[in-house]
Length: 221
Image 1 (tube, rainbow, N blue to C red):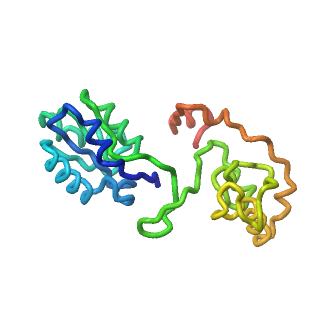
Image 2 (cartoon, one colour; image 1 turned 120 degrees about the horizontal axis):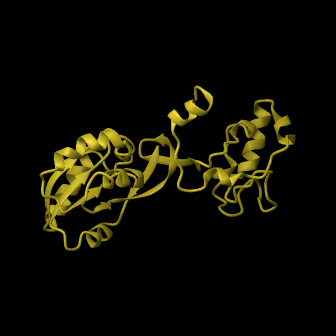
Image 3 (cartoon, rainbow, N blue to C red; image 1 turned 135 degrees about the vertical axis):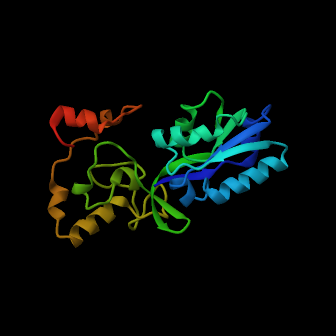
C-alpha cells in the first residue's frame, strides 16, 4: 500500500493560482484507504475548491490511478470539460500517470510518504523501502533497511540502549527484533551467514521492470 497524506490546503491553493476551471482525479485503491483520494475526499475537495471560487468541471476515480491503461480510459471523461488544470488526489505515481495523458498542469493534492502495512483502519506503518535487493529471507522477515534507522545490514550499532534505537527510542532496535525472531523460528544460524554489503546499484533511479522483457531473457518470470 502506498501511503499518502493530504497537503496543507494553502499549498494546493498556491499551486492553483491563476486557474479557475479544475478537474479532480482520485484513486479507488491506496488513496481511498488513506482517505486522501476516494469518493468521499473527491466530494470534500469539490466543496473546498468551490468555496474558494474555483469551478470543478469534472472528476474521475480510476480503480488504480497508477495504471496507465485505466487512466487513459477514464481521462476521456474530462476531454471536453474545459479544465485548465487537474488536481491529482493520489500518490506521486498516480499524479504522474495522469499527467502523461493530458496537456494541462496536474497538481498533487497529497504528499507520498512510504510503502506500508495497514495495521488497522487509518493506521499505517512503513515496512519496505523497495530497495531492489531483498534480504528478508536472512533476517526472519524483518527488514533492517527499513526498520533500522541506519539501515545496517550486519547487525546492531553500539548505540542501542535497553533494546531501543538510539535515533528514535520509541522504536525497538531492528536487529534485536531480528535476533528474537530468528531464535523463535530456530534459525539463529542465519546470523552467522556471510552478507555482502548492500547493492544499491540495483535501485539506480529511475527504474523500469517488464515481465515481457524478463520472459524474453530467461523464460517465465
